Image 1 (cartoon, one colour):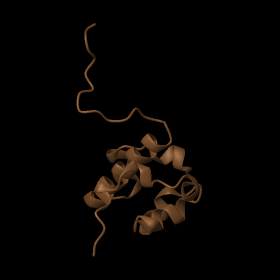
Image 2 (spheres, one colour):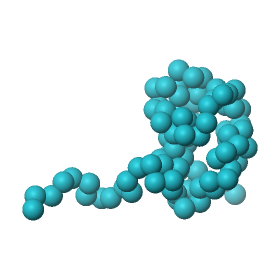
Image 3 (cartoon, helix red, strand yellow):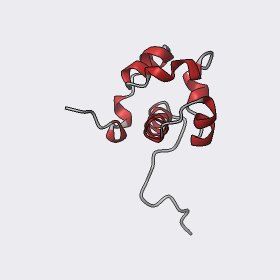
Length: 93
């Protein structure tokens, strides 16, 4: 049975695994892109956008989408981004 990586919740992020980028990528079945991130920490990686990923050599759209989703999950789990809400617009008080 295939894993739907785009629906993996932020709660599944393993902070210890993030310290070892090649192992983290392997856990996502994206280890073929390890060389694209050589010398980078997970903190640097999660700030990359889709265009930067493509420029670094992640040419497959599905892989870029999976990485962006995982970056969002990591940011949420590690407190680097506010949790997503359905209504994120400011309210008038």
